[in-house]
Length: 512
Image (cartoon, rainbow, N blue to C red):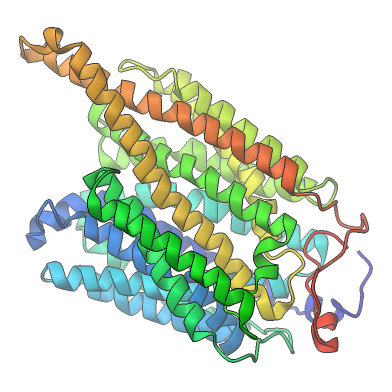
């Protein structure tokens, strides 16, 4: 790609590939933490005396703080400096992890998880927006986002493997302590090698009403879906959370349209390509989060796999994601329009999900689950890479942090929705199956156990059918809304207005 005034200073930065190593390491740590604690939760619950009613808060405290504070974290990174936000986020995450590993009771554990979420909300958008402002050459950008996309997509499965090993062979506390070396290496490395392009900060005053409304609105939304999973959709508090979330987020949009320096400029959200990414990726994550949950339970409860064996059983999906992201997506991204990677990618993932609707108690791992995981990984890896890059499509560097936060927010909210929605569908189908086959289970013994296993699998298969439809909808949205061409196709770099300095440093993400 020919050098331009917009790219020459930062594109030539010799440290950008070294920086990618530390950014990727930090992203891996954050994504790992979303699943690694799930494996350790039963052991931690017993040791700390956490009640069954409160154990979900070990997961929920992290999700609420992370999902609720992402937009705020993204704007802090834009205003304060992405490198500063990144390093502080890493140090804070390490300290919160140390607190969680040393927890001697329920309150200390929940506090540590909330702090992890808060510092993760500062760290995650800073990491993605650093890539956005450091990699401006189209081919280099494709490779960088290919690596980042593979980690973002496959890190959760790596967390299952690592969590299984640490819990089975060491102690649940190591699922927290393991974050500390990751964070220290990434923070020291980032401080030494990352160099932000000049003129890329947002000096506007902070939009306090926007911070309050967005944070409370997103917390209410995430909590509503999380509570729906355990208390049901008609629960009074669940319904109240959804109503409160709708009102708060509507007020947030109104405020953002009126204030001079909004937390989330609506131009970031309403630009067609970015909007298509946020929506299609959020839907795809709904499908993926539900699947992780169902396959983990299927392999451990129905097939009798150990935690470590369950983790390794997810390796084909990780391999598929890495292959799809770094080999297919990164190689084709500079040759074809992003929608022609994202749409077919989601459809390939849907084909893998479709295979899993055939799941039965005696299903063969090599014959059914392995090929399904490969298709899922290939499809999601191919789609994730251009999606991550397009999430900052056409934004001024001053808005890169908040645009990056939006793609993280869509994934976080998608994960909360996916876990609650698909779990509820599965539970309903399982209950219906048990009701229909009550006579077979009446005698107890092996026959009753078989009916119970069949009911669980029936529930998973029913929910997976919904996941197939959701992935098909993701593909349709990507193919319809995303209309930017391949690099060099002549599409505009950015929309909206900015200063002369802003114009010089606009990010040539996909189209030029």
